[in-house]
Amino acid sequence: MDKEQQQHQQNTSAVKRTLLIFNCFLLAVGNCGGPLVMRLYFVHGGNRVWLSSFLETGGWPIIFIPLLISYIRRRRLAALDPSGSADSSQIIFMKPRLFLASAVIGILTGFDDYLYAYGVARLPVSTSALIIACQLAFTAGFAFLLVKQKFTSYSINAVVLLTIGGAVLALHTSGDRPAGESNKDYIAGFLMTVAAAVVYGFILPLVELTYKKARQQITYTLVLEYQLIMSLFATIVCVIGMLINNDFQVIPREAETFGLGKFRYYLVLVLSAILWQGFFLGAIGVIFSSSSLFSGIVIAVLLPVTEILAVIIFNEKFQAEKAVSLALNLWGFVSYFYGEIKNNKKKKLELQRYEETASTQITNV
Ligand SMILES: Nc1ncnc2[nH]cnc12
Image (cartoon, rainbow, N blue to C red):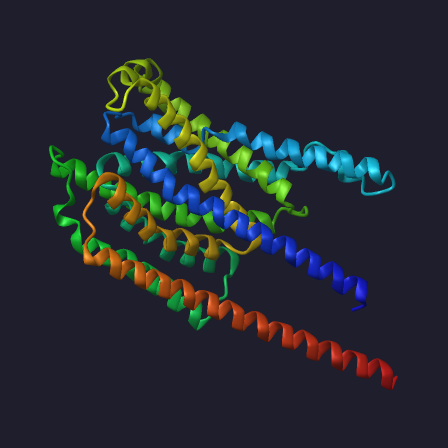
């Protein structure tokens, strides 16, 4: 490898690392803020589940902002270097194959949104967060089946610790049923959240698979287009649900009687839509920069943070289990990272050795 190639490779991996950090940040903000704001809506008098599902993906028009910035940047680069890549002034990169994949995944996401919102409507945030922790086990299983994810002892350790970290929280949920809620409703909420964890645990590796089978180069602009199409189709599913349930007629009435007032009702809806865009874009962005398994790990690691925020915002109790869960999650995360760093070092060493052998062979010839 010559110096120029080496420099190019270093630049590419620096960009990927920056994008990974940025998407982890988006995922963190969405994963912690999304459930809390959604619960805020239900706690203060909101009760439309399809509306809440809609808010999970309905904020897709904001994706036009980074897409526009990316387009302007490309145009500017093209103007500076007219002989550069022909792609620069292209508006849409997505080809029909990837469009179809993102549309299908979007429809699946729309139903998953409903399952998830149904759970948040009936369970305390702490309970739904702990159920979602088992999502990682499904993500790992489906990643193994769909994208042949390789596991090391460190990543297996991380999956086990993070899943147990979630399960530990289950020890304190018996007294968690909100006042006035029937046992039947509570169980329905529980089962719907488990179903959401299975479906989203399947969606993450499925996105990774579609990136791999896209037959076109995946760039971050393409990830943004993917997010836009996926959210658009999920929103269509939710709008149909809202129309069937007359949610649109109920919104103004609900706003009038909302516990925090009319202005804050609409603020909660808008904030919810923005935060959830962060969650979904962060999730598929992390898959782009790393893998669906890592995306699942970031989601699981952040669950105790959501728990702690729920303690602060909704005055839910901070039980010892939450601290234990947090410690287990951090341990799992450190284990995963340690394994990754070790693995990368090993790969670099192998590449170096390979290059040295290749160059000695050339010299000998
Ligand atoms: N629709 C959803 N939103 C957020 N987290 C989820 N986990 C599983 N489904 C989810």
